[in-house]
Length: 402
Image (cartoon, rainbow, N blue to C red; front, side, top):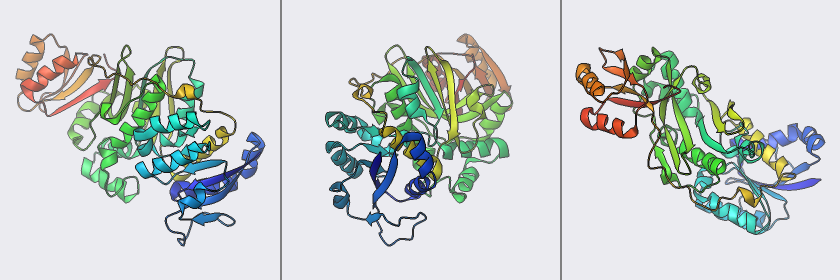
């Protein structure tokens, strides 16, 4: 079976796709029976020197040329949101399946695109949009579809995990760790989408949508990034067996849903505590499988290209059917589950101790000098009372602790 491909975008991931298809052509054909031929590539600069061999391929900056071409599959790795959505819609309306790695666009427009695909007997594939080389989208769609998923939780952004790892292991403050991440290419010159949690929020939304078969919008994700993380809190909590991670969390709380991205202290015995530097991991709770974790590279040209090409292969044999299209919007949870917390107070600790004891809140002092402690589980309402009374210098949830 031969498939003609239009590749939209020729950056790091697009070049990785071209190189992967050339290097593993025989392997892909022998294992899938499909031979992919890239016939067109859309670029913004047709004379730019490429890091991949594009000989024999029509390279153009004219999207209309590709929209009218005889192709079997469109692969979008160019980025963009609204204009890119319009381009993808045109292919889907022609009944042409689309593979995309574009989480920014999907987080806003996935409902519309999947409806278009369903109406035109096409399909939308987006494995590469979440957690890079980890096959979590396929896993939720096909491998865990016999489970009722109650929670998905993960380290979904390699930049922030790298920064927090450098702070934890090297004792750097946030600014120094960020500069290092920028110097080696893990962080952009403007890192706000990563460090403010926006990138992880987009991925959390996509995972929640699959896990719970509900529609969500980005404003339903409670967002708190890592820009205010103090190395002092990382070190104080480390002595108590806790590691700080930026986690995307999606929970089904009796048919109401809590979606959040925030730095959370994880017990060092938990698998996520041992995911370091640029690596990603996704932790899934299913009513049949129990707990499962999926680990691997969250980004990178070839790593992401691997997920893109996997979708290309699956598009020839596995259909992303309409059963994966949610019909209802997920209702936000109004009551959150109890949680343990790390707290560091401004000023004297005895006053805070007295208050916590009066509220029957059990706690363990981590540092009298720094007025830091950890509590056992308590309600969000109780936490709010503490914040209103004392305005703590630092407040973090603790996952994996009673």
